[in-house]
Image (cartoon, rainbow, N blue to C red; front, side):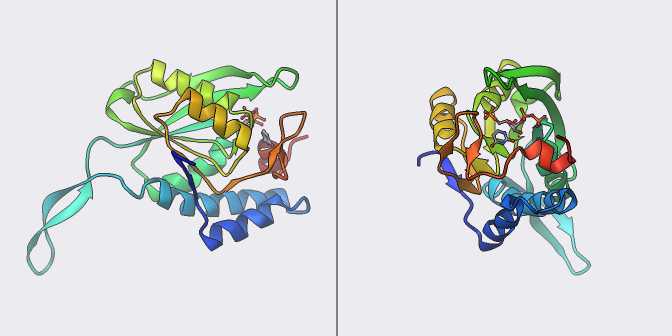
Length: 209
Ligand code: PRP
Ligand code: URA
């Protein structure tokens, strides 16, 4: 599918299988999400632009590669996005962070915003939006609408699981935003949950419900 990368690394797929199991504990789920975020983070940052800078090794000077441009932004869709965020910050400790508080209204499945805080200069930075689940895509679309409204133009979306229906809606709404996911599952059920999925990512991460 154009604009969508499925990260099929064996370690990602193995860890995802354990996360899906209903008997996996809250602690296990959180640990696996953090581990998997390192592997997904590797893919989503794979083609970041590099420049060079002159450094001195103990032996001689060299032109060495460094990341080009302003620090990137990880935009975490609360709550479950924070499970991916923590591992990504291990990979890119100097990254800036945006928090976007959204919850799904369980009746309408519309995304309801309750918090937004982001660096002011989004226009100058790559923004990687993170949320484990892309179901109807209402939350992802709302998050990206908001970031674009605040000036962001260079955006990627990283999730763990996506539904085909959500991917289709997302691409229509934001065709300029590449999507990275570990799996595209079969379909949504009538309550908007991904099948086979892994359940409610926020509840599984935090032991709520
Ligand atoms: C979950 C998930 C996404 C959203 C995906 O969050 O983390 O943000 O649902 O569903 P959608 O694609 O249909 O919008 P939820 O609203 O349950 O909030 P939570 O993370 O606070 O539990
Ligand atoms: N949000 C979740 O956490 N899980 C789903 O399956 C759908 C939306």
